[in-house]
Figure 1 (cartoon, each protein chain N blue to C red):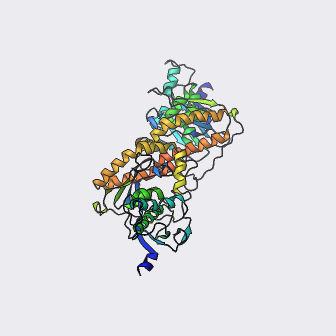
Figure 2 (cartoon, each protein chain N blue to C red; figure 1 turned 45 degrees about the vertical axis):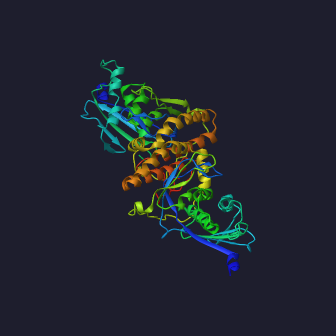
Figure 3 (cartoon, rainbow over the protein chains, first blue to last red; figure 1 turned 90 degrees about the vertical axis):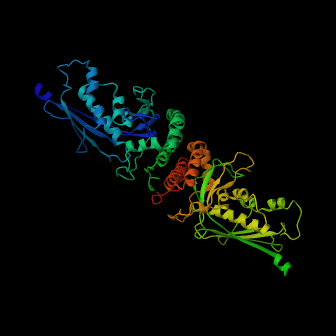
Length: 280
Length: 280
């Protein structure tokens, strides 16, 4: 029975989406996914929006495979590869193969489902990569450094690794080891806060975040000023609003920052439009 | 006959609209109408869009009066008052009343008509004030300093006092005497250039330019950076594109600058929206 069970090891996790109130838009390192500014988000409850991911490993699998909402996707994508965790698991095990532990040479099959529109501005990749990393971590019995791994999948995914109010610190190091998610306040800090998600359009965004923010970094003179001057001030201010549960200040600053993010999209060339007459 | 003619002296002028390719948005002095950055525009031909203004002076008139598109408007508005030219005319005449010249003590009646939508983003106030100043200047026989006077009516009006490609220099002096319109190139410099005006909406703007730009100056962190850092570079670049008749460079920079203007509107709080799904 043990042998049969071990032939397919499985782990299932769920992960939440997060909505940034101080926005992340722009990378200083596109490979390591290091941002040009820190950001801050609210992790939503999983009762409404979530990703569910099951990871399975078996000596009978001949290739790593990945399904997203029922459709197979390319597992060779560098972002997926960065999240497969084998290197980290190997490091944790100190290089020695424990006979009782799951073999890292087994191929994995992963299935991931969102119960909400994908790529429509609802942080599906944040929840998706956070969930992928969590499921594989459970499968391999790895625990720490996970927000740094999730960040390699999708920047904002690191923020979905924690609940409540979460800051993703820009960091200073070129290797990204200090560009991590950190909880500013737990979900219990402000239980009256509610987040309404109003779906104006469930279409895929016209320009994806990865390509869009890269074009912004290259062409928007305003984005640089935002990242260097405006965001550091706003971040400190937003943390104060959260600590003091000042809804007026919190809400207004969140709107100002969201508008400024859209402003830098408009300042990008060619311009990026994520607002329409209805969402405005 | 002479006496009867002089009982009502009249002058009629027309004035063109101008479309900024490096935008003016924000005053550093709201009374003198001094801008936070220089701007550059193309003056359009008057065959299509124009303001026509007739100014009349008579000893029989009991009050200054002004009609805009057939409806009487308040002549007491400081901007209108700043354009009535009596002070300048008095200065020109050296304080002495010339018996042959029109008496400056006569009240004036002014009628102004736009042959295009008013306050819909088509520079109606630019053409309007330029035309008011021109008509009164003709009435009073005054010639120079006119762009400075028109600027006191509406900032961009100073650019409508000249044809072709016109720069409105920000200036440095607190009294505004160096904040003037200057021709960069005459209309004959680039005769192939055509400007298409596509009216997406002829409605009045939801927020007027005067109130809107003041809110932007007070609340948009990006506008300050635009005025101080971005515009000076772009202005020099735009003048080169015009001199070289580089349409690709001219058109792309005009679009980038227009988008950046709309970006600073979006960065204003509360945000200002002059674009809709169609104009985008």
